[in-house]
Length: 300
Image 1 (tube, rainbow, N blue to C red):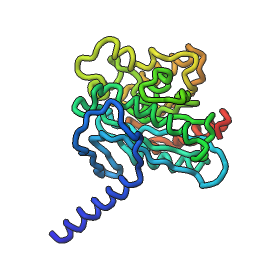
Image 2 (cartoon, one colour):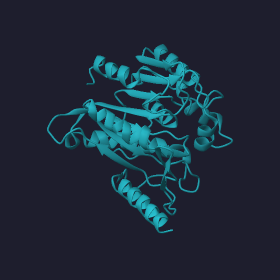
Image 3 (spheres, rainbow, N blue to C red):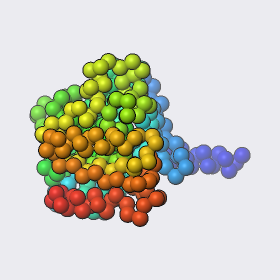
Image 4 (cartoon, one colour):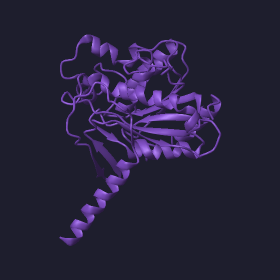
């Protein structure tokens, strides 16, 4: 019993330490209904899961405190718009970017919740836009090259990143300086792209409900909202993904190229879904061709 208490106390201390590393995304959260903060962090196998996020926050990872302006990537972890996999699709990824000379921000965006948001469908997109706004607003102080700020998302976080890439001009937050919220590039890892039949049923229901309108389906089906100014993309997917079909990647890649937007599609034969940076079935991890892509585009 004594040892159980010690273990529980240690987990609570670790969770509190992790929580303390995040900063609020807003001074005043838009589209909010005040509810008790029930956010929690739980280990699941070898990853950390965050659930019930109603107060969005971010953690910033800077390569070095110096005067060099570096590229930055804003990262949205996945989790079906139900939880956030903040370790292997968030913090671990930010540390990788630091290792190749890029700053990074991990965003704990709100989980869509009718009890905590006036309109749950726009809450994650608001948070994605706010993270971009913070990166642009603080670029000088945070050591960021304001012309090299990209976004990255995994699974449902990939849907969020693609939504910002598609709807960067549809501003849903306060932006008094009218700064551009268009990312300079997007990186999508096994992304949910569409709200149509080949998307992900759980993400769809969690974001826009059981009975969405046709306009909601159209708005959040990102392959239908690409234009010539959508940011260039690097997309990763496994062909045997049985959670989010690879057709999501195919259709988005096709839409980008139809609009003459540069798109690189990196496919694994196997790997399934949710592998993060390390596909156990592959000899080469996607971080290698991604790094080459970033060099080719002169981002790093």
